[in-house]
Length: 423
Image (cartoon, rainbow, N blue to C red; front, side):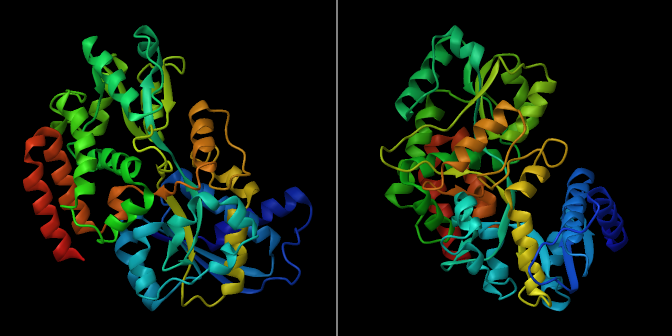
């Protein structure tokens, strides 16, 4: 699906102008010329959100001729290299970290480090994601939304068993022992499609060794047979061997894992905030469901988080980089990020630490956790941070480990062989 939305943007901009009575002066010198924007936000709500946000920018810059192209998200993934090379837009949506690296390495994205320079609003207000936007010491885009991962748990069951949110891994294991003794599983998971298991690896690895080590692994700089990687799996193995996870998870997808939390046969789940809506729809109230940050494992290691981040970039071959930078600054503002991320629009978290969020307890907890967590780093999730071939093999190995933990030596040797081929 591919459509040109210039008319739509113009109409929305006109409506915005009529509502305010006049165009807002967005810049000392009016922006002119063409501004071409490519979007992968093809689902109805994200599409409407982006169209309205672009219309507000158009209203501030009436002399700009803005053309927006919306491409189906899956088609976008196969087309991005071609359009960046042959017919580049000025601005485009994409993703942070390793997902942008191939296009940075190919010279197809513009260096926007000036926008992240010390003292700028972006540097101060979007600090939690600077690492995710950085390759070779430079920044290559600006984020507009992310969402938290963490442990969603049955507060009523914890209270019944006299448990509290664990502050460290020892308390996490102790809670798990009490949960098992009560006839329940500690964690539900559906690992049929593999990526859910890698979420556990992300957190165990970042809590054991930190964000920088995890990113070194993502870049292929650490052998999978390294003793430190084994230490991460050994920590995971403590949970696996005590029977922490629901049975037969390798034959369940993530949606099929949710009923175990709903009926109380499991106490918690490690998942992104997208799980909250179906859990509420299944009958859990906010008095029953709560959230906590994955606890400390190695004392002194800063707490990094998984927070998949969606981004805007400027093409290296953009024709109107002045207007493109102005658009990125507009999109990064606290005002815009508050609007585009509210529940009627994206329903996710603004990256800007000064933005406001909806009155939702999980969004509030996630926003506080991520906005105050810049020292620890923000990872993009395993299959975004690692190259596709490495991620695929590793996630298969992780699922195997959760079913057959004694296979660890063979799994790590196999993954090391893949690492040597991939990097």
